[in-house]
Length: 188
Length: 125
Image 1 (cartoon, rainbow over the protein chains, first blue to last red):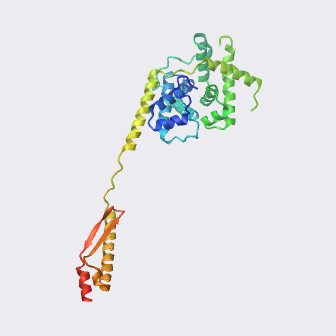
Image 2 (cartoon, rainbow over the protein chains, first blue to last red):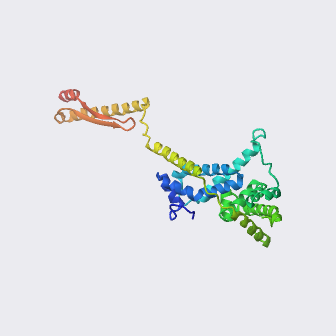
Image 3 (tube, chains in turn green, brown):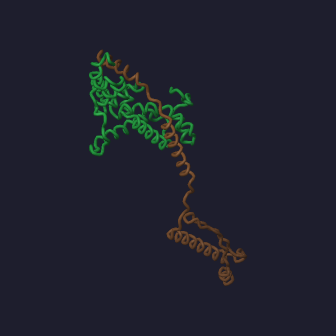
């Protein structure tokens, strides 16, 4: 359970129903419970804290709008939120790719190699640099796997893929990450 | 998929790396923005729920339909009245009170009919 959760004994479905009935404290509780993980997912996918917060805010906004129609006992709220946030991240990555270079903000950081980053930055920076080299769906699968220790069926549910497809993405993603990061073993 | 020792080793290695990176706590500004969003959506929903239901609009079709029903009812009542007048002129003393309503137009009321005509038929009979 999340620290500072004002309603640790109240489940997500009940909080959503309370918010739909006008209880604003239920919205604060849901935010406290889920925002950190949504921001973490956004950060791992996008590599930018402000963008990660935008994604988490948008995912929660969609929850507020859906609350009155939320079906208790249906999809797990955390799974639904991860799915919304994942899709928002992928949309942003694709939009950024399709923007013409002239319209894109000037990149100061020219994506240095993992080794170069490692020399000046922390383990986290190296991890992010390595994650950024993965195709977006591998990156998402690996991030979800190590975020909250999610099981493969839940990742499959979030990504709307079969469990076999998730296993394949995870195997390739983890292998690629480990191949990049292991040689730095001592430094990491 | 069978997990090999290499898989387990990669898992442990990466889990260790990811674990060091704690989930970032949301900033105060973030929490304020999200709280404001939630309040705004809730307020918008209250406005929608509280909005009055639209009043029914006048429709000629409905009006004619209502009028048709009323005229038919009046005609039926007159025929019944005439029939009763023939059968027993004393049974109709003052007249006939006819109430009617039409759900389609919401038109309703009470009509009082003068039974001179019925009396005439009755006395002639």
